[in-house]
Amino acid sequence: MLGRIIKGIAGFYYVAVEGSGIYACKARGIFRKEKQKPLVGDLVQVDVLDEKDKEANLKEILPRKNELIRPAVANVDQAMILFSLRDPDPDGMLLDRFLITMEWQKIPVFLCFNKTDLAQEQEIAGWMKIYAGCGYDVFPICAETEEGVDRLRQKLHGKTTVAAGPSGVGKSTLTNVLLQTEHMETGDLSVKLKRGKNTTRHAELVPLGENTFFCDTPGFTALDVPAMEPEDVASCFPEFAAYTGQCRFQDCSHLHEPDCRVQEACRDGRISPERYAHYTRLYEELKQRKKNLFR
Ligand SMILES: Nc1nc2c(ncn2[C@@H]2O[C@H](COP(=O)(O)OP(=O)(O)OP(=O)(O)O)[C@@H](O)[C@H]2O)c(=O)[nH]1
Ligand SMILES: [Mg+2]
Ligand SMILES: [Zn+2]
Image 1 (cartoon, rainbow, N blue to C red):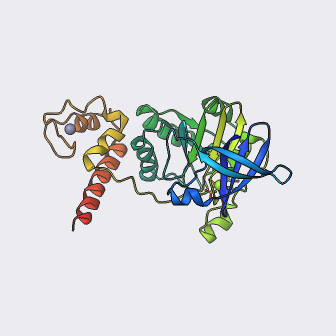
Image 2: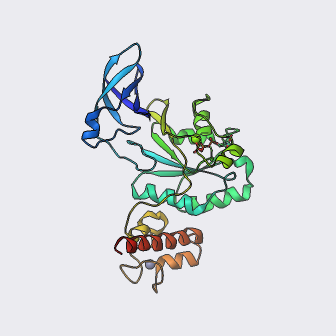
């Protein structure tokens, strides 16, 4: 039977088979030997061991369309970067790290800002301006009141979407809203801040209707961008695309060179100064990382 891994916990993978239900499968030895680790989102062949107790064996992992490292999921169509406008406050640098990680992996990505109930219109407009200005789809929502969720639903329709973002921003709350049930455990922020721990510990794929899946993941608060050359960073900023190749120097780093179209665009407001600052920071960070590697 063909199914899809919806979660993996404590040596078991849970495989959803259309029309039959969810089967628990022990992680078998063969996958370890082949160094192939099953991932949430994998399409798999299973042999049923016990229909009553819903136990099965993983037989084969079908070839993947793609595989993300963080969060570790396979076969996604798009990524939704979710931040909250308050509690926790959005950190633009961290947001760009998430975006760049997806851009580098060539995963279509869009943005969602949650907890509009806690923020001023002006602030929301500020984030919209920066990121819609880069060409990203941006969805301001309030998971609590479900404001904006219908528009988001349309974006999710017919696709497998992985949600990624810091802890406490409301990924699991939104998952529950989308499912219209209290399926995922959500965190009490006052408790969470004290413990400093994630509420969600494992990625879980939930079905939202025909061909539509949503993957809730554990949040993380720090993120190293993938190993890439400093020169590759610019290609992860879609709003630079119109200018690259137009600078005086073909190998322009857009940092200090004269006649740089990217720096010009930043000076006259066509590129956001925040985004440009994050670009230079990532460029330097990757340069430093490379230096440390060869020391
Ligand atoms: N005011 C307000 N609070 C919200 C909203 N959405 C979620 N919350 C609260 O934010 C807290 C954290 O929500 P979670 O859904 O657990 O956050 P998470 O992103 O799943 O966090 P991790 O699982 O730790 O990664 C909970 O107390 C929610 O009730 C919202 O739209 N407005
Ligand atoms: Mg969660
Ligand atoms: Zn340049």
